[in-house]
Length: 459
Ligand SMILES: *Cc1c(COP(=O)(O)O)cnc(C)c1O
Image (cartoon, rainbow, N blue to C red; front, side, top):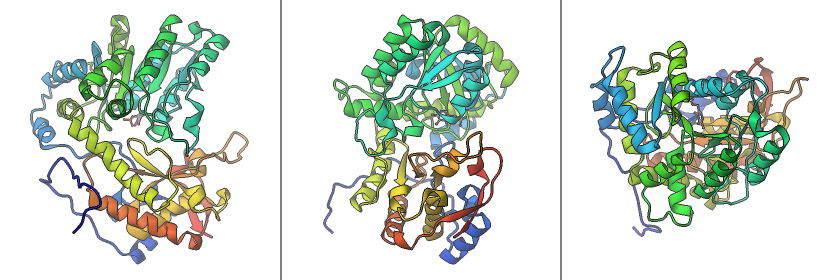
């Protein structure tokens, strides 16, 4: 056999397996109809390869599982907390840490502590839970990401960067005293996992601090971001991931983290800050909403799994495999001519459903239809990120987002290259038969966040 490229493979071997139910296309057609052509309404046991999300769907290592047996389930002062604190200081470079049940718990605390009615909170594109907590605390979110992030085809190394001019314009308009902090997401989830450069973060910090504005990092996927800096930014090629991560976080005043992503756990999160008074307030507030400041809604074993996950996430072979596995899927699709969002980001490949099903008008939900067709074709579950997810405005009219996407999100360490071959094969086959595809009609629509529970029929 002749290789067309140097082969590479997973940096782990499999010790425990979770059998998958093998189903037929006829079976999946029935299940798709029962689920109203909505992948959120499928039972996971009917799914073969589940690419709905990379959140909390990670495979833990034997080292993490072994740590679970060392859970110190004391109410106060669990040794697992102190170990987590050590690892957050060592790798994320913050002085204080408050554990929370997951990322949104951390966002709740920091938003409440810093935002007052009438405040503005800029950020490099919104994230659903982050913005929700900022608004609940009385703030108004302002998007200050570079324009290119909203275009699916422009290839830029750091498409998640903050547009410094937009940030400056907001300061000029409302005054620095009305901006408690800027949220920098790295990588940017809603932009397709696009990274932020070190140089950009430094520019953000300098402008922010000049006006007394804090920089709060959404560090949920910051290790993926560190890898991109190592690969793409001048001066970082010979620096290690821990060095880059430490330096990156060092330019910020604090961070919120969902442990369900980079940290390879199924639950958990934390907020970390340098300021002693702010820490005091967060530590006091966590007692009301999450739990005592040494467990924050987590079991001791969960903190141990997070702590060990932090040690694993910074290893070059792990983060490199993570990014390259996503890239591998993206490359196969690009080679076959399938339109996807470019460049491929850190955690997912986004199919451009508007271009793939270009004969289906947006009012007939092309991305929703493509996600359903993909499930029926091969048992692969993806998520619609288009007109259905965007919902309706106050007058009841549907938002018509520019991007009509299907997200293939890759859980960490869960699937092999062979699984991704199956995914690529299926997407390419659907693409080649795209003209046979039909749109959908909405038959049931819930009032809030309709994408979770809406039901459709085929036209
Ligand atoms: C998942 C996520 C969150 C929220 O974290 P949860 O653990 O789901 O509450 C916040 N920010 C980003 C960028 C995320 O991807």
